[in-house]
Length: 232
Image (cartoon, rainbow, N blue to C red; front, side):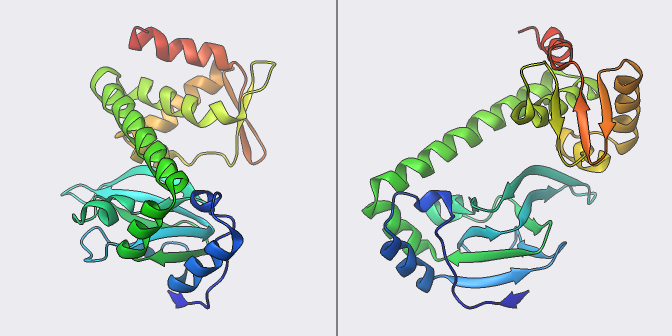
């Protein structure tokens, strides 16, 4: 971790409705740090209640079982933010945050975050929409863990990753190629299970690797495989 001079919050989605002057003022009141890949940005056990603005880089939200197994909740890219729950309610952190790439972070104190949300209804609205998305995603994940077998959970995760890259010809690309251990961490299974499922999908011509991307050759078929088991 390295301390940085204040930079810009212009590309943080949360503050799009603020003026340039307001964003500059907020930036001056934040603490700025640089993290290398693998460095912990927030420890779940830490006393900090700051909100983290991801100015550059990519981070992962994780937790760990008693046996030390990593559980991945989400990846957040530059422009996003994390840690608002503790800033809102003052309670301990619910997860840890780890840098996946070289990452610049602006730490905003709970007091400043609360003042900004109170003064700017559009910022408050963005926070509420993000919390709603988290609840919806958590509900879906609980349902998948409760109703789908390990193989189908892998299918569902691939479907989730592929949706942003869906094309009119019923194909989709996931870039970069997802790492088996990352998928396993997200869907509570083993890396070996993920490898076996990926091999089966490749054999059935549903997925195919193209350089640094994973091509979903038949998105609708993959979707049907998941929905059939879900009963939707």
